[in-house]
Image 1 (cartoon, rainbow, N blue to C red):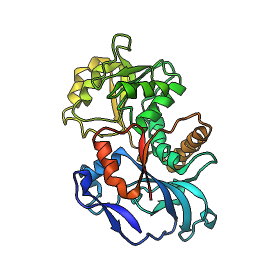
Image 2: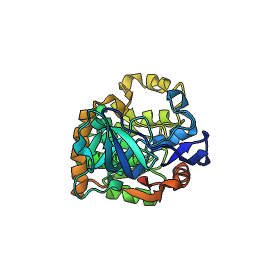
Image 3: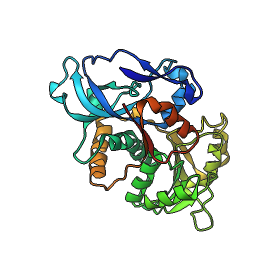
Image 4: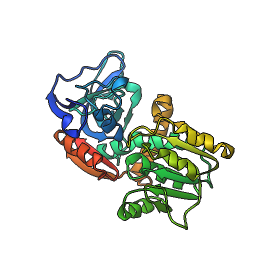
Length: 320
């Protein structure tokens, strides 16, 4: 089968089309013939080599989120899954391929009205946004800032915070056009990348959801209200400075909190329960799935170039 592998770390051109044997499901796994593959920010981080020490060697096939048809199951796995349309989380990668494996506890039937493309746009991002707000102990009536809101996680966080009756939902983004689209999705204030949203915006925030990290992350501690909480869910701009904690200590009397969040720390059944609700809401058009572009699998280099250039609003999806 055809797949996309990381031939060399660094630029998008390090991705390469390869022909490899189709995987065979082990006990507790299903084989999905992919109809859509989500391209996420973490894929770019892995491609750059930032996470090489975490077990992503050169030659690795990225991609953690797929949707398609179950075509085989492993031993001791319910054969009634065969032929069903599902969303699947591959776990450690392997999604950029014509066929991919997923643990049976990490697949979910697609409801009528939800396409494979929409499923991989929302499936992981919506869950991360939901549990990030929970990790921040967000409550109705609080003010939220979503830093890096133009990606699929940020778009989900904006919608969920608005649905949960935030007093304000501010976003950072790179252009007036993106700001306009985010307002349509529930944002109340649009800030530039420094977090400046003008005189009418809140002076401080109870919660900041940060998808960006990078060298400027510590500056956003100044945007938190007393007892404010920042939750980092991504590092699309790279890791923060090693001494970023000193900024928290400088604001000791404000009782600020900082946390990281990975969906890996949430039990699969808890993730799936949230995903069932979100898929149903999306199928009813109550939760928007924003697809930037659908490209062929062999256009993965183009997809990653667009991400690196900051051109993507929503999610790029690959179709084998």
